Length: 69
Image (cartoon, rainbow, N blue to C red; front, side):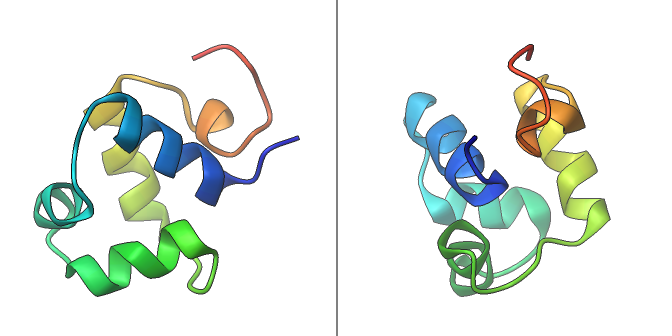
């Protein structure tokens, strides 16, 4: 089972986006977003919700609880 940090990195890379682009969308810094992808920082719920809307996927998908986007 993949961790959410692996999944958010894959979603970003599959869409040919930079960490800075996603960080700007989340209104945070690239460094903070990078720490989410590395699993150093826990991602706040508001960022999880924002990423679900951005990528049009469920929270269960990002959290690794479902294979269904």
